[in-house]
Image 1 (cartoon, rainbow, N blue to C red):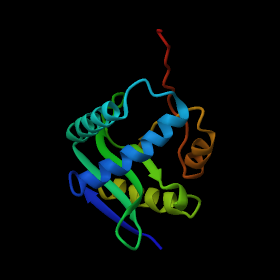
Image 2: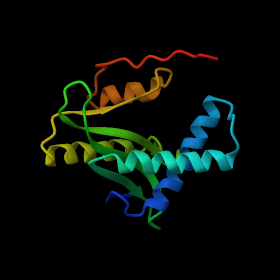
Image 3: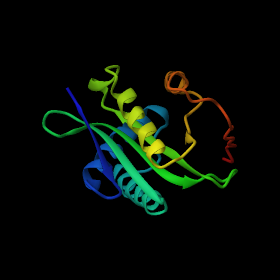
Image 4: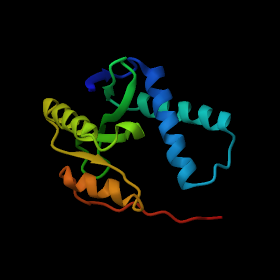
Length: 158
């Protein structure tokens, strides 16, 4: 059984960064061949994580903890200004669940807490970005009530 605990801003930040770093690395390693060393990845990951955290008005880390208080799931959201409407929105930077804990409803519990935080802050919209190739996640987000509203385009230059 897991318990859901919300941390604000920099509470328990080292554990949160370590968890995100480990699960993000698994995803990146599956998706692309790493072109940098693991140490360089860790350095860049921490720098980017802190930069994103510091530029957010409010940041929340919604965690799923096991019986020993180890993080097994994480949803990171922040209150930001939408660059199209200029209204405040909740933006989900990441949602990650340990492989052994997937398909047990933990993601849904984390997302419900995210919706509660948005409502408590009188925010009307929550947004996120997902890889188009991640069909499973896209299907799950749509099941959670999300809809495709914008497209993010890229072009390889090398």
